[in-house]
Length: 397
Image (cartoon, rainbow, N blue to C red; front, side, top):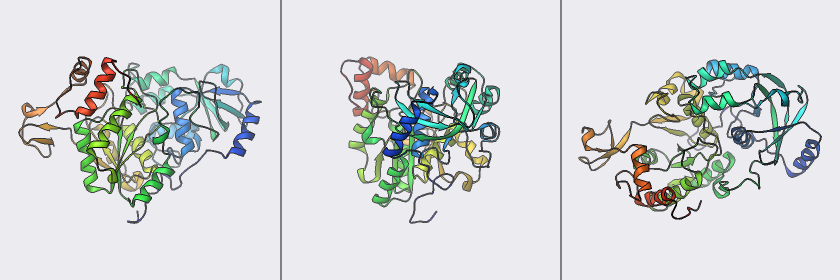
């Protein structure tokens, strides 16, 4: 990578599958006579990620050779690193209306026409191959495993032409101001003179340990992209509008504006741990980031993955294959003896000096209207979460 240029997209070219207004009009006319497929919430998120180039080099939903290669080898059939198959699943009744070589209209669950797919393949959904390889477990209690089990038994592959990605009728949580596609973040980085950018993936409010990681990254890079995921998540996760209010409050008071950019990533969570860490890094590479923060149990859920499995998986690939540099952080926490944020790499003191709080304890405090210690969470963030947890006042996105 040149010192004066941004990192190239994964595969070398930033994909765009969004069509111009004239093409969109003709596709809408064509779609009226095509068989229809209603996308799941995750598939609608995936469609947007393909359309804007966040999933470059993918131009559509993957075919059989890519599906099998991804599951077995964490690569597309051509050898390009890719960790999770991006698929369009249909049941038998929908499959009966489709044919290879034909086309189909893709709809949001609210009825909005999103895209047209050119069908290149229709093949059986090999869940027995996908589930254990991608998720490392076959336990249906895992939300990613259950999502695959609930999906259709046939997969439809082919490139997509996309008319829109954010239906007007879909309520809330569009975050238009922050919904910057990869081309726009790359432009913003260039305007700021940044060439080294660290990305921080999150689906939770940022507490003091997260703040510490991002500020360590700011010390070694030109800037940091705070890049929360606002697509589909599992029940029980804090709603995206609440999280966005937390990010805004935190950045306003505690971050250097000229070195920080907040944008949203409209992808869906798979909770696939190590493989999803790779996916999240490649996505941020497409957004123009040169570094990617990988913390404790990245993209994990429950006890399915080891604490640092999501860091260790990067060692299976050469730096050239991934292209983006992982920043591997130990578990961080406030140390009373050190009087600051630390990790096991920088602090000699035992756990009795650390401020650790479980997620359960934090939720109990919030519901009781109590702020967690300021060594754990900034008070501005805590107050927003208390308002949400106690439902005493609405929280604006």
